[in-house]
Amino acid sequence: MPSVCFYFQVHQPYRLRNVAPFSEAEGSDLFCDTANSGILWKVARKCYLPTNNKILELIKRFDGRFKVSYSLSGVAIEQMKQFAPDVLDSFVKLADTGCVEFLAETYYHSLAALRDRDEFADQVKAHGELISEYFGQSPRVFRNTELIYNDQIGELVDDLGFRAIMAEGADDILGERTPNFVYKHPHRELRILPKNYKLSDDIAFRFSNQGWEEHPLTTGKFARWLHAHSGNAQVINLFMDYETFGEHQWEATGIFSFLDALPHDVLTAPDWQFQMPSEVVRDVQPAGELSYWRTTSWADQERDITAWLGNRMQREAFDALHELGGHLRRRNNPAALSLWRKLQTSDHFYYMCTKWFA
Image (cartoon, rainbow, N blue to C red; front, side, top):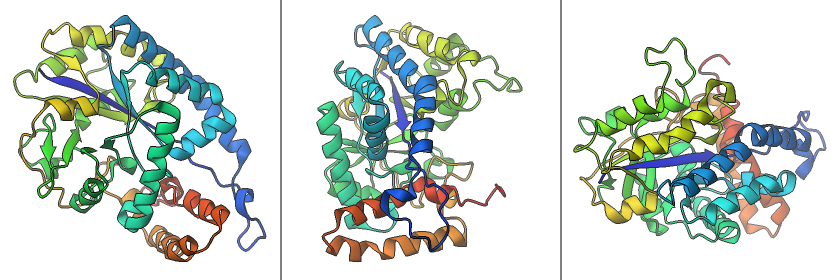
């Protein structure tokens, strides 16, 4: 019985304010609460609150047959608690349905898996404690920052006790295989759920593109594309930023109407269902081993890490930041450690990207 597995990324960084080099600004003075609260509430009004309400309505309408999963970064949860508690409450209501799974990730949405095994483990542990505190769940499925993954990261995640990880279904990794199956790490029992990037991006990026040959995208059309995989799929993983709904694709595009009608059209085929990632891993045996011999992500056409570490400026900043790690962890200074970790957030490196001369 094939499944549709929805996963949404929810993340907001602590944004830096303009601070002159070598100024005396310290700690929280580096971050701009005006920008952080303003952007969070803008996204909350356009995406988080209306989409959470719609997801909750759909779960009730379909008697729990509609299910989704989220990864909320620790820094996003912190800012919700500080600036938008109604948003955090709306996610708690979703958790209470039993039809929403919250995944594990790095607390600070960092690139620690690429450099610092101990820091990676510490952040994952802290994030798990936060998810347990607010949503009453102990995550067993892992989603690394921006789906960054390779075989070595898989070993780290397996060592931490997770059953599965989500990854990009990159063409060169899959080869002749399809992303619509569960795979396993070549040397571990860790399950791998590859993203079907074509179908995911049809919603996330192409939905409102009037130049796209498939525009307009209706739920009937999309459901037919899903159902066409019957007999040759275990699960179709639709992974995207949550801001797809209302922020990247504005309400005027019809994106909320699309979300409202999609479960019905998918479930018209009696052999199809919606499942959370842990349910997929529980019910489906892997189709085979899959080696991620290079580091992949869900970013750009290259699906690599050059968006964050592609130029010398990014790499030098990354190296300098992580060289501080051992010194900071040996000192009893929680404020300094927290500041250092907030600066690890991947967005700060992404803002230094020059690959598109942007």
